[in-house]
Length: 259
Image 1 (tube, helix red, strand yellow):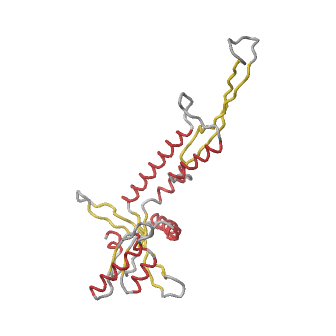
Image 2 (image 1 turned 45 degrees about the horizontal axis):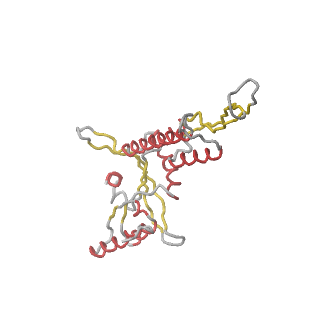
Image 3 (image 1 turned 90 degrees about the vertical axis):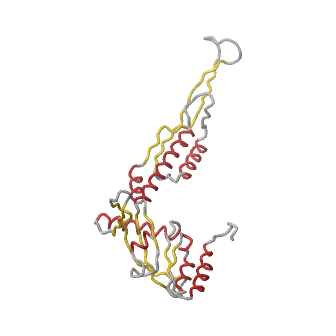
């Protein structure tokens, strides 16, 4: 077992080798989670003439490609060109399980090494989209709650922010922690109050000298969601990419998506 101090992507390789050596055959199809999609693991599977199916992670290079794949999928969806898979629900009626597109791309572990073709299934599942949309709504709500707490209304025990740089740094931290920094607009301002005080002790009078103490605080009077970017993000919810290196004859689109 690994201690957790390094990636455990490589654990798939000895498992695949053990199964293949026990069955004494090639062409085995193995499915797994995102760890199986590591390029070195997929390369080893292809080199030994086996097949694999795994989801691509949404980080690094795959994330950059995913943005383009989703844009293409949205265009095809508008044109009614996505392949759709429906399955029966509890009451017998059918509902959309997934819709998506398929592309093929060459894959190679390193320059000069043998390459192989893999299919990329770019799929949108309504259930996954609803889950992501709910998560986004929760993050936006949490960001607003934490934002409001940074500049509370004046009152006993309500600590006010007097330093602009500190407030903006704290606000930036809140938005980034909830991953909504591009989804909210925030307006801030400096507010000042002047409080006259008599100099010295005793009762005040018309002839007593006064001095004025000014209190400055940084305040956020307005914060709102950016409806356009949020709508665009919601439209892109629910998409995943799967990478089988099996042909469509060996593993159909529906079998790959629904397992």
